[in-house]
Length: 607
Image 1 (tube, rainbow, N blue to C red):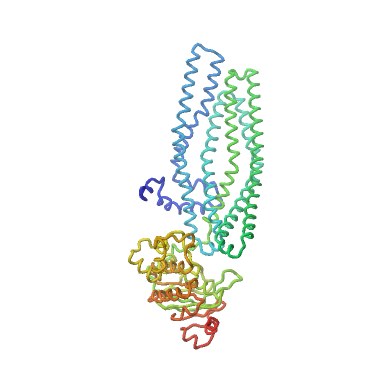
Image 2: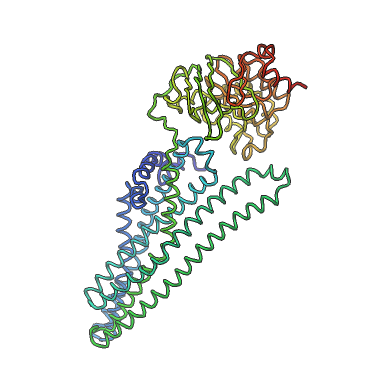
């Protein structure tokens, strides 16, 4: 069995190579914004030598296309004129033809290997750059952009660009070299035929311009339709349990089928334009080839062409030339797809909605003191979430936030984690404005247990140790015990190595939540955030988790968002939030004795 290291050695390029070039690709898009030609060549910077060598082998491998017609014309002329050494001359021409044809195998291999390696590396780096950018973009960007659209950009659009690039470096190069060689040979042999070639080839290209605008429009509409369909499909898959539970299968089938039909219609409209364009193009090129035959026959008739073999040469050259021109014209849809793909990719790489923290001071140690000073925050103009909110939190203190849904509790947590910025006021962390520190280094010291448990398809061990691969077995066992996971793991068929399924679907809500808690605490954070961490647990599991939380929050600053008020009795202080404002704050006993807003909330939850 091949080891991981051996497998990596066999790769055509390393992961490090890709990572090292990702930032260059991002810069290439931003520097040449809107100029797809500069972006295209900028992406291949560093591969120019490989592409040059690939082009050399390409020219060599294509020698039969240009020389075999000359050899064919020579043989026809020899047969017509019957010189004394005719057999010898025919054999020599035949041997030269065989040698030229045979060398196509090695030269084509090296041409393809050099080109494909460069092409695959650019595609991999492009995907890597998009992945890196998605990790840099703000949480608000991700909440506003469907994941299906992002997936389509990373996979489908890069694939379109890859196809576009390959065709550029093969078909276009083929056409360019063929036209130069063909026109040069014809120019030397007969100026009249040369002039006819010059007129016919551009005329064929001119015809294609009529279809270009429609193809571009159709490609753009089809791309947007496919992105929307991809987003709808992902949403449908995630909602299957909900759909099935409520008997809404027919509604979802109709909704998704409608999206699929819309995409198919736009694809059909595009296909119709492309195929009509292909048929018109075929007629035009065939007529031009017929004109070439008649014209060269006429020149032979009046004596301008001396050898009958030259008619075959011109006809072969002109046919080859028109085939390549046709190939370029047929590339229009692929080229349009490629440029549209670059436009789509640029929507990610050129986005300015960044969480820019690289230039700010890194957090090397976190004590866990927080202060909200007159903080106001809103997601949009019509949705104020916090209003003039002020609160001081001491190091190691446990603060619980309670209130009705939509009161602003989650907004406070989003500000603490740095997912959003306050519109007014300031949030200080250890005396420093959170907007003036490197958020990535800051987040190394905090852990979040979200309300919606997020697990990936993998083992229990992999989900717990996510982000901490070098954790020791001793520390792992401690975390398992502290998270009340021992009994859960004992009941699983393969213990820690049991696969949890897609999104952890093989586990119960309580089991998933405990794994989420274990993942949070395994990093030994200085600040822990529990966003309704016990919401998915039954009463027995809730009591067990509550013990773990109380143990784990010792000497750590802890923020707890809770609907079940019974779970926060031991919090140092409880902050009651309503409509984005702090109504009251104090310990559980203080607030109950006060008989204010918290007392009313607790009374509503009493049996």
